[in-house]
Image 1 (spheres, rainbow, N blue to C red):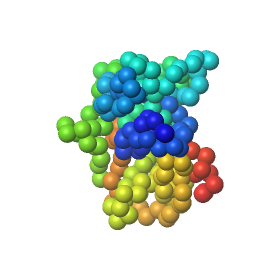
Image 2: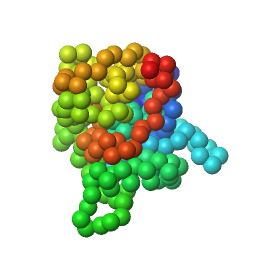
Image 3: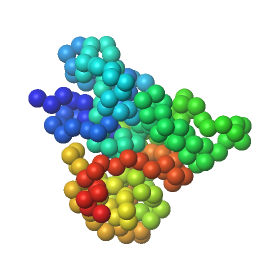
Length: 213
């Protein structure tokens, strides 16, 4: 039986058999029996590598952080996570630098600290009733690496990539459809992260997308 520890672009934590290419966490979400009891505990939502310095963990150890898994980095970013400063240091630094370019601060010439980014992102992840925050934008305004829905296509989720839309699924991207810049989209990736991507941060994409280009 699959554990409930896979994360969708909407930020939902689900039980599916497909394995992810990245790990992450939001604090301790499970009980001693391995059942998810809350969608998040802390504001620090991270994206981590699957292996780091030979460390070994028992998944869903009682009272330890809940290991979450993502199809790829674009999925994790859409869900509201950002790169870990320890196991993905280079990616974290690149994210910070792009954040500084996208959100310049007159009070500081240095890239933002993790807490500053996490506070901003947390307000763009979930509403007061704990539903996913989304916003509307024209497809032509969005950079590669953003995940979204197009109302006319129902609940399908798509990745903007290589001048096309790639249909997301838990196991990879299934098809490529044409990109029309004048179409309205419901964007899942938080606004601040979209700005970071536009400023030059390129999310890591699941290999299945390469076969569709």
